[in-house]
Amino acid sequence: MSNDVAIWLERLASLHKSQMRKAASAAGLQLVHLEILHYLSVCNRLSNTAQALSDYLGQTKGSISQSLKLVEKAGHIERKPCKDDGRVTRLYLTSEGKTCLKRISKDILPELPRDDLIIETLKSLLYHWQTNSHLKGFGQCKSCRHNQAFDNGAFHCGLLDEPLSKTDTQKICQEHEFEEA
Ligand code: SF4
Image 1 (tube, rainbow, N blue to C red):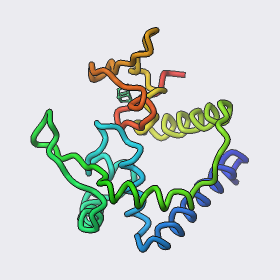
Image 2 (image 1 turned 120 degrees about the horizontal axis):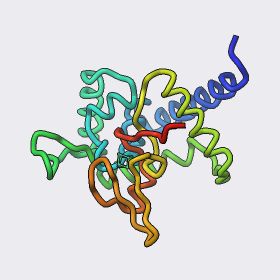
Image 3 (image 1 turned 45 degrees about the horizontal axis):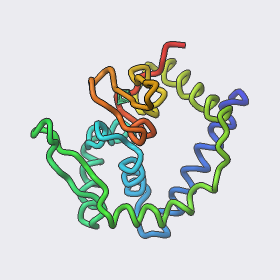
């Protein structure tokens, strides 16, 4: 028997999935194509690879690779070699991809009120779920234990020893780690 938290969580997850599926279908896309576009719009510059996508969506690399080919052929994404490591290929939304996603996104989620209590509750749920399942990653950068915030408004990633912009801290990262509770 599910407890109340699980019931509300499952309802939210299924509502989000069905709205995504409906919006993708109305735009002539498959659900996974929309999920790829959405992921690339919210992930940080370290997490825009096929491997990260496959981990985030829980799909095999082969299946993601097929989907990426179709999304690329449609002109929604492009691949570029990583500036720091030529063996890594990074994925980027094209301007067509951004426009397409913007048009579709308004049909997925309504305007939601920004409520710190709700945000903390959702973060706590993710923390407990991931901890209990021995999973990690894909949290919002500003909540990562490696994120150092300075009085002058600057941010720094202690794991990668790289400066972060305020926009970087809003994104999700495959290396994200929560503070120990
Ligand atoms: S602070 Fe954490 S979430 Fe942010 S870039 Fe570094 S590892 Fe990723």
